[in-house]
Length: 326
Image (cartoon, rainbow, N blue to C red; front, side, top):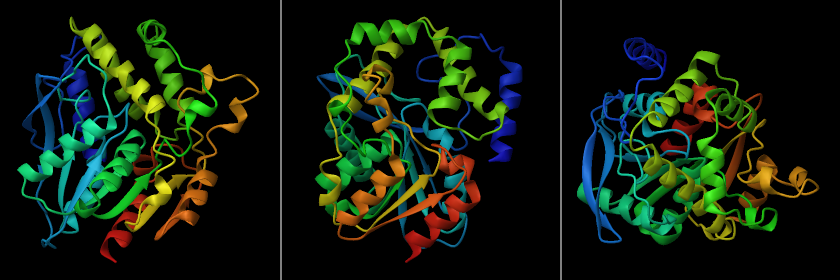
């Protein structure tokens, strides 16, 4: 992780913090070569960005699919990619449609559509079965893929997933226009506080600043409003398309890797004050789900927040590799 953080910081030094960045992150460095898959949705031609990283160690014949969270592009998987490749895995890391270097549609998104695009990518890469690792929102997508395409998933790892509870039970619907206005008015300092507080992050301040600067540079883009509508649409997808009721039905061997400090719960600020303390008990929720599943267990990383693969890189990679190699 250190070398890539240094590369990002050097790149940031060449680009002033307020210099506009395209909404497909044109010019923003990713740790590995980026390719694109053409897909069509709602009659609109789109491009899905992805990294396809070959093993750097002795190949073991297995492939791992990494699914990013809502606020973190595929590049945030860099330390995990490096560890998996060194262990002999081929690693496929897409930016989902609406995120990172992929196209930003303005129509309503769905986990079913994201799952279809992801499976289309696996088909294009001639990958019949993969291990799937999903972080945060990517955990919700991983659940949908495991349910809809169980024959494509060898093992499943849910890294600090959201969607372990049905947020609709606590949070009323929020109008898209209200969400757009709030996100539009969110300052850099407000976003930094949101990351640190909502995700209970233990990362160094300079690493958090990289995420904040990325958002601010996109905000300066002439296409920011398109990016904004796509981003807000992903909240509506998370809120309106719960997967919590399906997790117990997964038969694929599953590992939950949870941060003990992670109480992230999308939509909590919109819930009635009396209900907010009932949300985000993610470790307990993971254990309850695992107890109802055919082959699942939970590992909890003490002193760690929502970004488990970055905050506890060494321990996370050890747990991941041990589980996948069984």
